[in-house]
Length: 155
Length: 252
Image (cartoon, rainbow over all chains, first blue to last red; front, side, top):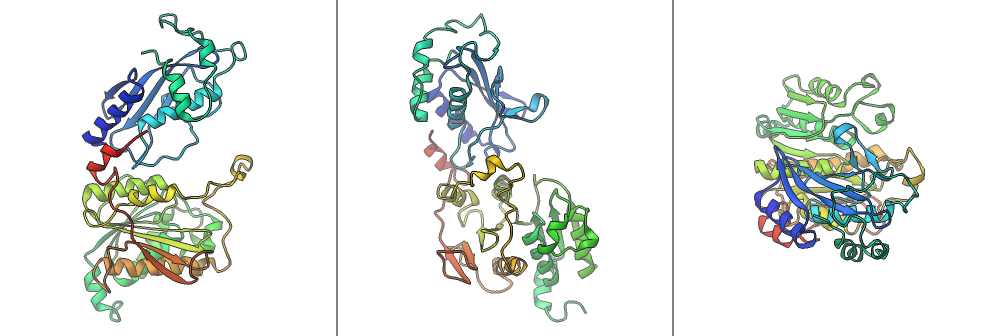
């Protein structure tokens, strides 16, 4: 069950590492959303992480990436979500390290340009294809990836 | 008189409401013991139906095959005590009242039970087994007095062995359903029997529960522990789930 203290801390952590990601609440749901650019394709992905107030942090947030890449998707319809190989620990895990896991997923699954048909980046996103050469340097541990990819958070 | 051999136990337990989350091997055995001891009101929660492979380690029998575990178990328990008030719920856990006893192999279910225990300020007992019941694990959680389940779960998950790579290649692999050791049902009864006595102590019916050592490892023959022994341990208290002041320590 989400407490106000926990929600404030979750926002603080996200602000610390991904200030462009925005918190939201919608009825009993809450979470963060923002945009990341794929390290190879340059595709802009909309990332949504959403929890249920009555079940967080006991249950991890549901993660959606649009457009969807990779095969690691479970669930149906609007409840379809990314299935990530990570252990969720309510007393330790947060939205911030969920986002790090999303970064790792993008780093692994984002296709080479032309390798797989991907929707075009949103034309209204400034700089959507900038710094592609730098983007390909992402690698190593999560923090290295995070530091590298941080420059690609668009909003 | 059904309870003429244990009238004091019956008097202490008759008005008690206990919710058992998970009605598999351990849950069914504990339910059996609690009803024979005189518990008057039970809520049973489990979404599964009874399958043939359950029979070797369950109080239910072939005549219950294919039925919801909770409904079949409720019927079985009422055959022990016809006055038992029982509420079978074939569902995943979301909420329950009374003393919470959790006998599930789902970490998330345990987390939900822990949250309800903290919110309702009611004790919860977590009973589990690992290594094909070569050892059991029992944790007593009393809100405000002991560490909660997450205080221990976070500690444990950092030290657990990862699941074998077989899970990536075997579509039927299920880490919670490994083949049992010889003497499996006896092992289940040993772990649930010790848990049952811990619950009696928690309720003040028999003995005294040392809340400074709320984690019990019931070792049968798991390597690295003394065989056939109960090892009682301390758990560091305070985590971001049960203690709001610890939330500030959350990091990335």
